[in-house]
Image (cartoon, rainbow, N blue to C red; front, side):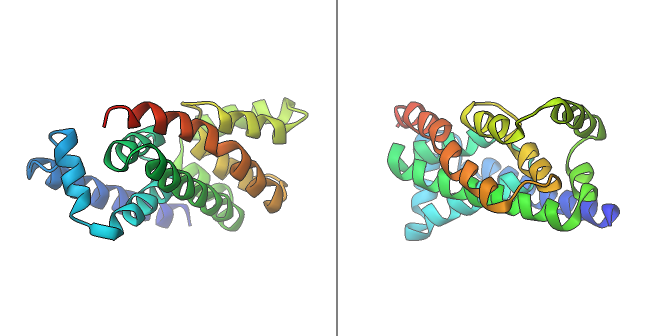
Length: 185
């Protein structure tokens, strides 16, 4: 199973990179205005595209989430960017959790280095309250949230509890990013 997952992840990453490299060389992302114009070309589907992009970047953790938050806030403004980012990242987080529930450790070690898994396993074993740790981690910027979503799926954490942690914890950091990057517009 692990080999199939790695192939799918690699294929998704290659397609993702090729798409954005082509857009860059077509000079679609050479300024804030060109990014905004590019996104306007998708009309009313543009916010949906950002939301989908943010969900995918959690499930296939290649880029840090704050890059999508920045692009969303710059392209759509603070509030629309926030909602697209929040919904997409939350949806991707829940998908990652359920993928780990279904495929187990194979998917986690296919997506992340074995050393990272072992490091967090040791830390979590010592933790008496993983739920609080996860909640605090979702509040903080630049934390390995994507990994923790997958990791949470391996634990005996109740899915409702996980979803509530995501719903209540995710918006604050995303809102901060959206406000800061929205000022660039």
